[in-house]
Length: 590
Image (cartoon, rainbow, N blue to C red; front, side, top):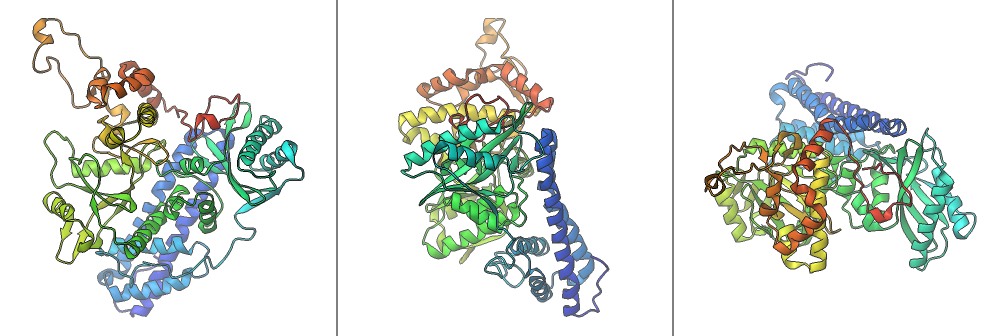
């Protein structure tokens, strides 16, 4: 803030000084966010993958740094009046007027809330000092030209579709050449023709493509839809920049495949289209089963995604009689977890005490969640939103859940006569626990899931993560049939562990000893013991043995550690192998 404010100034004067300072801090954040986002195109063109990874981390850290700075400024400026609720109501009113003409007003409201939540440890919400619901109905300013570029087909058949796709590819997205745009356009057109024919539709009439590429890790994506009469088909062209030039690596034409691409288990996209309101609404038309909150998060606005998630939760509580209840699955020793049957998120509370066999602390658990937030999740780690001081009607809680929280989470949860206050929780998308899935799903589905379980462990290792306990209860199955990890108690960096071969006994006394006759450190892992401790029935373990036996070999783990230490960005595709075009190179996106 420009200068100290004194207690002698009126509330009106203070509000007219503080509100512009917060608005200016918000603009600083938006400018910094846009600057980092715009760098993604050059990173892709130059194949600067390490720079892209560094930018992803820098953009995640930006919000907290700006909030820290403005919080200090507000506290210094307002002094003894910093917690004056009436003053903050006036500041909010002035601030609302300042952002009324902005087309990113919803982000500005969330930014203000982030400041007030730092100043006030508000239980529940206070509409006098927070934007609980938006002050605005829609974007006051609409970007000229909208959020998409439109391309029209000038002929029917494969030739017309090929021309249409080639027009898209050649529309100046990059200052780098395609290896063979015509070839790739023809391959995409073939897939598109089959998709439209299966849908009973005629030829493509036009394409609507978001006016900037989406970037993540090594990949770039042109995202939009194809219109063929009354039929609308999603269209994503997944691009790689190889040594020979840019190629279309895959084409996505189904909503489910887009949903996996924009999953809550993946890192955020960098896409330079300015304020996100229209972009998010367009993406929601492509993926109507995804929450608006998840789409904001997917394009990097995780704080506003959290705001949208909270508003969505409040709507669900108003419109339903659902009660919170203990989540299905094996109860965790570190977290108490509850959910609502009709709402697909879980609330995770750190327990007051942990068993002696769990070498963790509350601070360590929170550190692990921060690690997951900043790390490349590779489609295998569930992103969690951190909430504080949530207030609910006690009648919305099942009796056994209240008993569990009272016994094991009293330091975090206050159970009163009328209300339940959750002072700290991680909120995640609900998935089916793997141990529940293997008991209840059809055998064919279970075998496929177990195979993906092994691949999930490998994908995590490729990004430098070791989950700790490789037990089914710590993993879940998404609605798209993908395995994800959601238990972060003992999760750590892969390079923090020592992977060892099991020593060979040199005498019968050693071989049959009740306890280990060799030294074992707290971070020692013996991969050949994985089959014994992974907790799968013998028939299902055979699936893992058949497809992922290298997980039991110390050479896999030490080799992956070497690749991680060498800062290799290992290829992990965010789409099925069947979606790749023929004769594609081995390098991959993200």
